[in-house]
Amino acid sequence: MLPAIVFRQVQRPLHHGAATLEHVLGVGGSSFVNCLNRYAAATGFIRISFLDIKQRRNWELARLRLYADAKKQSLHQRTVEGRHLLQGVIDRQRAELIERKNFLVDDIREARHKVQERVREKIDEIREERENIMTIPNMLTISRAILSPYIGYVIVQGDFTLGMSLLAIAGVSDLLDGQIARRWPSQASKAGSFLDPMADKLLMGSLVIALCYTDLIPMWLTGIVVFRDVFLLAAGFVIRYISLPPPKTFSRYFDATHVTAQLEPTLLSKINTGVQLATIGLSLGAPIWNYLDHPALHGLWYLTGLTTAATALSYVMNRHNTFKIIQKKT
Image 1 (cartoon, rainbow, N blue to C red):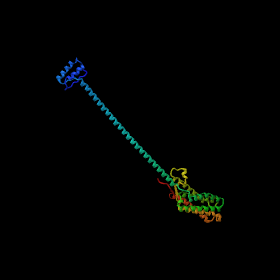
Image 2: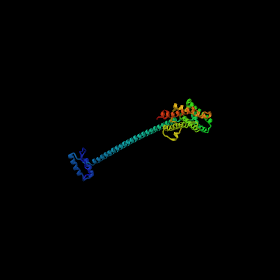
Image 3: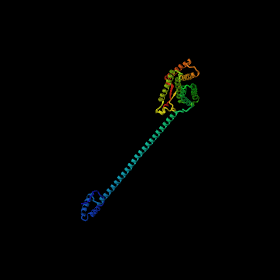
Image 4: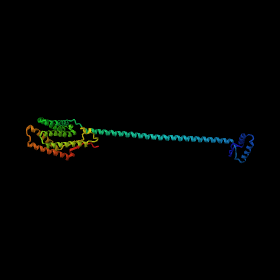
C-alpha cells in the first residue's frame, strides 16, 4: 500500500512519476505503476508522485513558519503597545500626583502665609492696644494715690497743719497732670483717664474718713462720698471685664498697658470734684483758723452732698456716654 496518494491534474510527462514509484517500490512495483500511468494517461487526471508530497510538506512548513512569525510579530507588537499604554498610564498618574503635590504645597504655603499675616495682625493689634503708661501725668497721679492714705493718717494724728500742706501738694499735682496731658499729647494716655479719677476717689475717701474720725465733717456726708466712690470703682471693674477681649485672664485683666476702655468725665463731675476739694480744704482749715461750726461751712457740706449724689445719678443715666469701650473691630 502506498504511504500517500495525491490526485490532481498534471501537465508533466508520465514517465517521471513512474520512475519515482519504481525507485520507491522496487522492480516488482513497476507493473503496478505502469497500470496507474496508463490509467492516468487515459483519463489525464490522476498522477502519483512522492515528490509532490514532499513539496506540499515543505510548503505547509513554510506556511506554518510564516504563520508563527506573524503570530510572534503580532504578539510582540501587542506587547510593545501594551507596554507603551501602561507607561502612558503611569506617566499620567505621575503627572497628576506631581500636580496634586504642587497644589498641596501651594495650599500649605498659602495657609502658612495667611496664618503669619493673622499673627502679625494680632501682634500689631496688641501693640496698638498697649500704650506707654510711664508718663509724667501718670507718675503724678500714682504719687497722689500713694500719698492719700498718709494724709489721712496725719489728719487722724491731729497734725492738721501738715495735713493741709500735703493736701495742697496733692491738689497741685492734680492740676499739673491734667495740664501736662493736654499741652503735650505724647504724655496723654487712655490709662490716665482711669488712673486720675481713681486717685481722686482714693484721696477723697481717705480725707473724708479721716475728717469724719476727727469730727470735722458730718457722718452723713462721709457716707455719701464713700458710697459714690465705691460705686464708681465697682462700675470701673465691671466695665474693665466687659471691655476686655478674650482670653479674659487674670494677668490681662490687671495689665494697665492693655487699655480697653476710656472714661469721659462729665461737666457735673468736674464741678463736684472742685466742690469736694474746697469742702475738705475748708473743713481741714477750720481747727487751724478757728471757724468750726461756721454756717457757711455747714452750707458747703450740704452743697457737697447734693453734687456728689447728682454726679452718681449722672453716671448711671449717661453710662453710654461716660465710658467709651476701646475695642478694635475685626
